[in-house]
Image (cartoon, rainbow, N blue to C red):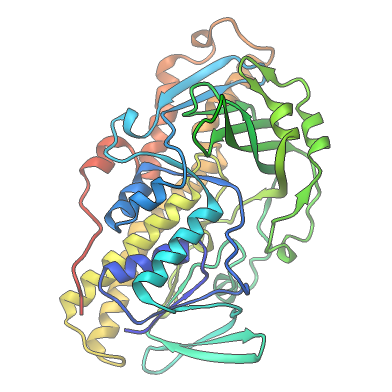
Length: 435
């Protein structure tokens, strides 16, 4: 089976590795950029993603890239404690949560793809068009530095992010991602040890927020932190469609000034921002839920299918879940159909069945999760604290009862598929060799 993947980000590379683990070998990954540079800042891989990376044999190399947070703390803009909870192994999962640099993770996944599949990544290939053939195959047209080229595949998977070219072909009237009204500044800085070196902190409310978590082991009372600063009404960003690459660096000074009085016990927000190695600015945007991901023998994964706000730290994890789920259903269907080569009706029926099963498993869940992130997901406790006690509080239990805080946290875990009981007990997404 000939499989083409559009995009060599986290989702596309995880898809290639998942398909290889399910027994598929004829895989090509097309990437529009001329090099995979490992850009970006930090991201969190939640336990459900680490389970999948573990089953792909990648846990050790990913674990070596970052830190496993053990506690998540929510505070208001005055530094008052709203809620905290254990994370990863400390929360009863069989797998940790890992905070890693996105670029380092991408490079590690790229290296694994090359090790397992060989020279299958085609750089400088920008998707232009996809046309289905009478035999069920898909002919993909790319623009390259040397002109246009085409490739024929039995299955095409769009993993090309929030500005997905494949998605745009299927939904040409969709336009740019809608802006939430919030601007994000993300960066990495060396800073004093954050609490115990394994704690994530989220402080603020719906108008202004600061998030920080460690990316490296403590050294001499200091460590590398990833941070996200967020404020409403800063911008504007009118031409999002022209900003496929959001690695736009800005001066840390004005951003630090926005948080000038955010100095709490053990957390100097303006000091962290001012000390950033680099700050990247971009709008907080997402994509509306789609009624359909699959057209013919093409489908979408990751941000191409369901780009969502970073509330809940779940975007990269869900892309990995998409990859594994798609590979599971494809491998299972091909094994059941005992299909032959290209053009074999049994193979075509297996692909169709797999795509239908994949979309049924993932699209409704991601539609619900997208709506949850727009409602701020687990960060809702910060919004409620600001609404009910805008000047702060003496006792958080008088503002938001513990039972309400617990349900907000647990409801998000259930929606995102990583409640401990659900994740620890569900069946594996690994399959045997379908060939």
